[in-house]
Length: 169
Image (cartoon, rainbow, N blue to C red; front, side, top):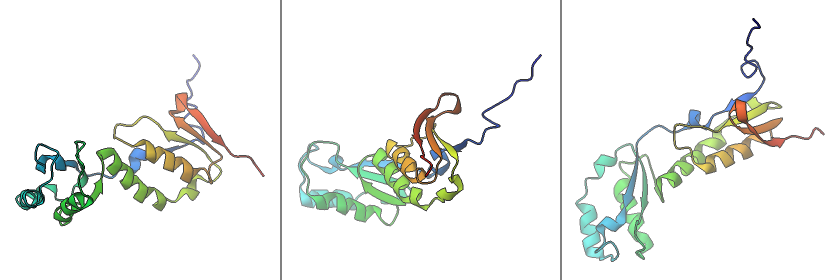
């Protein structure tokens, strides 16, 4: 019987897995409509009072996304005020969704990676993930890898989609 050879394991293909860089830590979404009258009307005195009565310590060391979940037209200061209450506790606060939050985290960490280790190598950006890696992170990773890579593919080694191939000068 012929020996089975794992060609993927023996290849020079480098796998770039964004999950390896996923910032660990709890994420929370705060919807400010909970402090609006009927979810739509902001009455400043009541809004401030409700914020003062919150236990913000429950967000200790968490990544927090703050937004309004209704179509209420709120002044910009409302979300800023919420962040002032969160600031002593949260690791990071953004305006938007949890996906926006994860995108912001990757925006910070991807530029810090040393991509020169991928110089002239074929790279596959791993596609399947168990963690919620946002699309923006894949787009940024591809852009950071492109100046170094000989080629870039997306997906898994058994079914990768070619994205880029350098032209030798």
